[in-house]
Length: 196
Image (cartoon, rainbow, N blue to C red; front, side, top):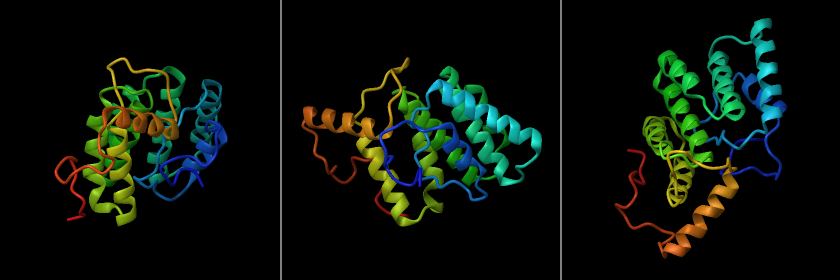
């Protein structure tokens, strides 16, 4: 099932149907999920229409509204490369720390998919907020993923959107070229390897 790990298990881009199915779920989306593999613009537009139809039909209620809002932010990002308005609107509407953590992680992932420098501000905030809600395996999954992705070279304007698997591969190549240890020494990471 997508997304539940560091990367996708298939090579193609996320489809409109996948994003709609994901956000129709009544279950809160795990903060450990990676939600930012690129959607082709045509797929993002189809997903936006599906979500719009669901909104009109009144099929989504309660926490599902937050999931739907995250979905809208994601598809808008892949349609026009900007989801700042969606992010600000959601940030003003979040009902609890768990929702805020998911919002920050999701938005940070979208920015990182295009290698924008502002990504880490959101990813670090989201991880710090999510830490107390995470199962140990999810905590260490995010910690490991973030430590690996920190080797990426980011810029204010960003670059072509890239899926998580490719980002991790690129980060590993950069790490090797720089001669950085794959196992950071204690104190190097901004996060501690404990849940306490």
